[in-house]
Length: 130
Image (cartoon, rainbow, N blue to C red; front, side, top):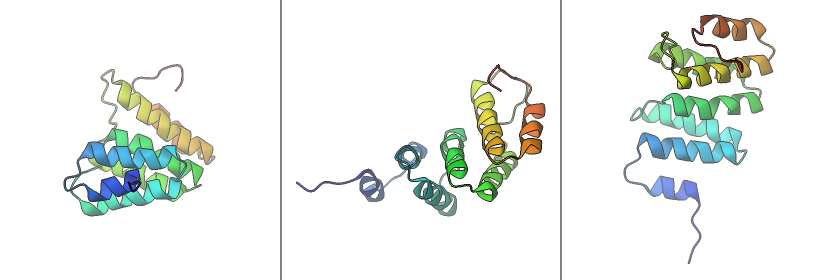
């Protein structure tokens, strides 16, 4: 029996949903294939069938840090802002706090303390980790 990898199965899927996209992007990120992670994210954006959600963003941002891809990280952050993802609207939403910490971490790893501080200042809910 021929061995089939996760990407091969993903490519064979007739219908791909947000969960399959997030899963295959996550597999690439967890295996250390940061370039593959960003390529799949770009493919997802080009396909325009599904828009990235907070899970997608949380998976992809660390790839930017690992590859020293600040420009790409800033583009993802701008995408989030324009789509209203991770909008900290005063509700106690753990996913918003988590994504904002991920963005601060990315900026911090690049030494962009001003940008990290701006994200922190705009968070209405801050936990000890932030």
